[in-house]
Structures are given as C-alpha cells and as structure tokens.
Image 1 (tube, rainbow, N blue to C red):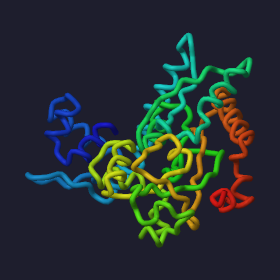
Image 2 (cartoon, rainbow, N blue to C red):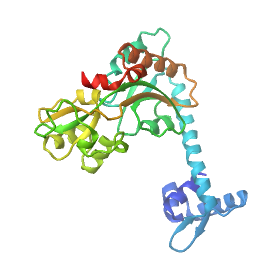
Image 3 (cartoon, rainbow, N blue to C red):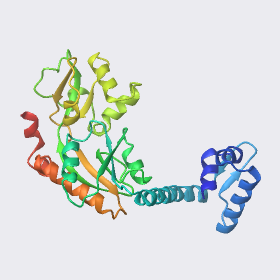
Image 4 (tube, rainbow, N blue to C red):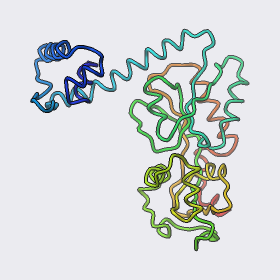
Length: 289
C-alpha cells in the first residue's frame, strides 16, 4: 500500500522507486501483484505519465488515512514505553486563549495526572500532529478539519479588527464587517489567509504590515492582547462571529492523561468565565465593555 501511494503521488514509477529506495522492476511487480489481488486496474500507464484509474482514486482516498493511523499507532506505542511518559499538547504560540499556564498548573496539581509537554506548532498543524501520533491533544481555534478528531469548546471570545493606527476607523468604539470589506465566510481563516497572501511567515510580521498601512486583519481578542503595537489599533467588530477555542484529541484515544488534560482545560476556562456560557449570555455585551 505504501508503494501504491508513492506511485500515485509521484505519477511515475521511476520517481516513486527513487523515493522508496527500491529497484523499479520490483516496484512494478509489487503494483501488478496488488492489482491482481484486488482484481482491479489501479493505474493507466503511458510512456509519459502514470494516472490513477477511478478504483485507484477510491483506494488512495482510503489508504492514506489508514497508513497515517498505522504510523500514529506505532509512535504512540513507542512513546508509551518511555520511562518518563508525558502527554504532548500541541499549541500555536500565543493562540491558547491565555489559558496555557493555568492549564499546566491545574494538571500538575492532580496527584495521578501525567505531566504535560507542550509541542509548539504553526497554523493549522494541530490536527496533522494528532493524526500522526506526534501529539496527544491540541489547544486550537476553530475552524479545523474534524476528521478523526473529537473536541470540546472550552472558550468563546470576541474577535477584533487589527487596523493601522492612522486608519479612519481606528478610534471608533466598534465597527462592522461591512465597514472593513470582510465577508462573514472569511472570518475564521482571515489571519491565516492574510499571512499567506502578504508573503510573511507569522503574525508578528503581518502586524508589522498592518502598522505600515499595507493591510488589516481579524484576531481573537486574547491573541491581539499578546501583540500590543503603537502603530496598530484593535477595534471590536460588532457583527463578527466569536472565536471558539477547543481542546481536541484523536477520537480513538483512551488515554487517562488526555482525559485529565481535557478536564483541567475545561475547568480553567470555566473559572475564567470563558466557556460556552459566555457565548449564551451574549458576546456583544463583552464587546461593548
């Protein structure tokens, strides 16, 4: 199956053989044997390129997550044998709702809880780390790819617009999405998209461009609080959907350490008044304050 995926991704038996470190004839023979075993043709072969057939495309869609799950199981088994085991929590720097330190303290206070090690990651890396077994849990903002992932919403908070300090709306008590030329469907991934479109690598660089008047963006209020800038004004957005912070874990996880971490995360958020009750009582009231 790994051979099949390599050929499908490379669209060439020669390149796939080089990637796998095996001889070309051995790879071709393995694929023919697979096709014979399944009774279907997986590839259309020509002198120029190798293309998936319809059955091949169906198989590829099913095999990729199966191989990821297998690799993840191996990683978790190896980590479970370590003498000093810990729960790996994936977090993007400064995108933890301001809860991370309290969460770690709450877990450490539990007498039987496993220690938590933080794995810093980039935008939208969290779910990949969960699926590959490189993390046991993740603290992240929606949206995310939910396939194979369970999650609880632990905090709900307003979003703010990051505007140049000399922008016409920079001193407004609040603005609306229409004032910013932003559609509701853009809200969840706005900052990530802006980082990609502006050719920068992280939020600090994006905010430098905001301060120069080159762009604007939307951020969860807790993230904006970590990045005060004289050249940037943060303005509440009246009709902006709130940001939701979740604690996530692989849906097949049965780890007691992960369960303890989820409980601690929920308890800390509730103690701060940041849970879903905050959304029910009206996020707009927080924005006006």
